[in-house]
Image (cartoon, rainbow, N blue to C red; front, side, top):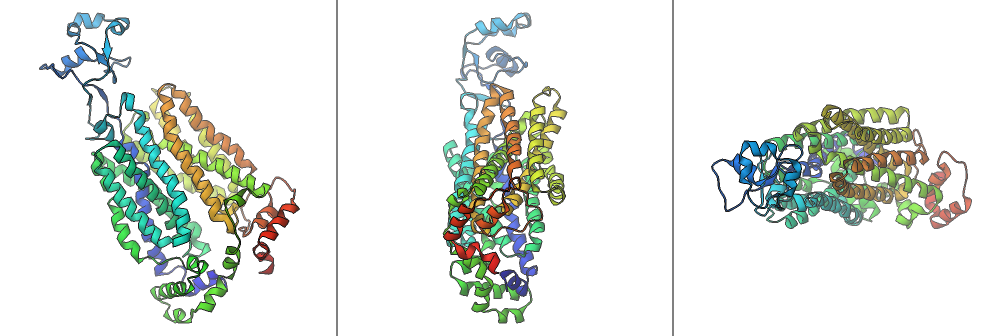
Length: 558
């Protein structure tokens, strides 16, 4: 009897699994709210230098004309003003005859008395709160970079702690950390404090993702994993629409940050109900607790008779395969041990990095489209629905490799074409960006499935952790590239479009996995090869067999 048979005995798709997956999916609805929160709390309102503190006039328009020069677009300049009031400009004849070179001859100064913000879209943002404009404008992107840095650190920290202390306790800590970190960020009194607590939120998000998906996968049978995985993916998509609705109704950045953080207190409270993974308990020599958890599942699913039949010997027999493989000593270095594993790891790292890099590059700068940021957020979220459906069909019929390559290359092409479209054609520019973003969402869906099928069971967690770190790194770098677009608008688009095209070409070197059994050992991966070469490396196989012969030949002895 395998563990899957034991899970069927206690009920693999009963009341427990339905309630279990539903409750674990609820926090996923709010994850997009924190990932994309920057679009709203760091929205840059129209602004210009504040008038002189020691002057006052009955007409604000006259004061503005006398103190702030107009830019090429006819709007007041954002970052400088006249050193002295230019009262002569209030004369209509003189203002009309004033040429651009005449303005440049007038002595200018920075915004010594602060800025005036037009708060029609948002009542308050971190930009207006701490004047993150002009010389300080790079700090806006820095806040998102630090958050994504927290996500990267969290993937490393919580991934290791989860394997050591269990999924349930780390999920509890992550929920509480997200709730408290978000609450503290909402009441931050300085930009530094805000960034520190956003780093905490980023770390917590990684803990939520890793442990939620582990608990979901380890309590459901293989036959429903695709359906459940697709459903949880759509929870994140729905979360993007929820964020747009919440942000539209809450225009103050503090209350908005608090609103998307409070639900995690509820998640923390009901997370005490979750049962620890029976698989993890057995592999960490806590088989007695695993038996109790399985009996609890059987009772919830209405199978009390089956619960009484479960004992320690039955459980250990069902987990013999996993226990044999877990006895081998594997590390991240094994991802580079053979040429096949090296190729897979390098190619997947490029795919994950560029997908995340371009995805957040498009998603984190909604104001550039010239339409309502709430509307564009809804459109960007909604496009994920057909994109994921299409890529699921493509992966099932065309295969994983062409789907992965096609989604990446198409997204890059859309971004590059956008560089050639004039700025006044906003509808076309927005449409191309939406298609590109949908292709990147499809690439993400393909990444998760494809990577899990390429890595063998014995180091699958290490492999997924490695490529996930590359994705976090790409998301961390993406906001900083936006700064290049301020001086050279085409440069950031060229980078965002070129990266997925390059990685789409690299993905052609990955083997196809459609219809192939999941590899259990590194020997299985080496036997399968890369698909485009039949070369074998017997010495490397011998090394693997010597490292863990029981696990390498497990399939043959089963």
